[in-house]
Length: 336
Image (cartoon, rainbow, N blue to C red; front, side, top):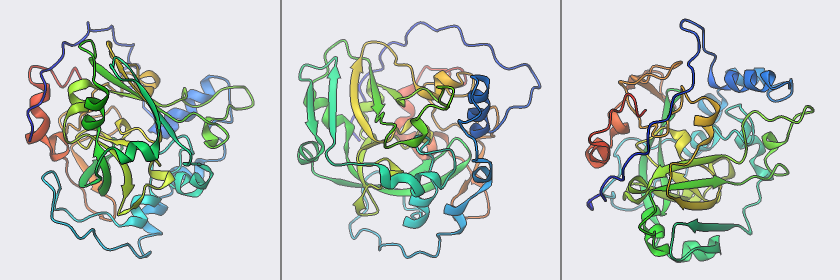
């Protein structure tokens, strides 16, 4: 593994928002969205989706569909040897809130996503800002296969065979300036293609769009951090974040932003979508940590999609040997 760059200094600590009253029940994440939308004066944001809140079609209904054979290649240096999640489940059970809050909404509605043509802008604190089409971007790098664990903050997990290239290779090509400390990622904002981005009758939406995420620069440069363009040896499906998504395997899945259109290097820590929506629940780092429970989900165990039992969750999702040194000196209970 290549040596990691030195840690940049953390920004001054900001005053945290007021937590909910002690003892008050906390709704599940999709219910949180519904209440947030209702609080804003809309009954539409999540209307009609209650039946989807309990559906698990990707787990149970599509397991019988045939999966393509595993890629014929030797294991890579970062691959897990765990059983790969079948294609039908990997593409049928998704969180992609731009399509809806149900686990099967993304697969059901992703046909509306147009991925050609597609342009990506890389700008901010770089010496060579660029806007280019996806074919040109893919032509810059030889594609790699990476079999990574994926851990959702909701307590479920998968093993995903991605294809893509290291984000660090792209960032080095555009040459970050000495002032760059963080990387902000922006997803597609197009309500015509992404139905949950459309405002309700009252003009509100469940989340502020576009979806944005962020990493520290050394996290972005780490060789585990991938920009994925494929899954299971096929082009990346819309419900999995086509045509270009971030994959950060030691963090909870919501950090791996989908359908990326802009990558901006910044001097200051960027605001991120879930941290803005519920800052007491979703920190900037979002490293998988079984010792730091989410207010509504213990993170000590997880259920691998396709399995009935729960298994212990590993620190940094099993990648501690590769990434724990990035956080030396940080209080990971406070910097959750």
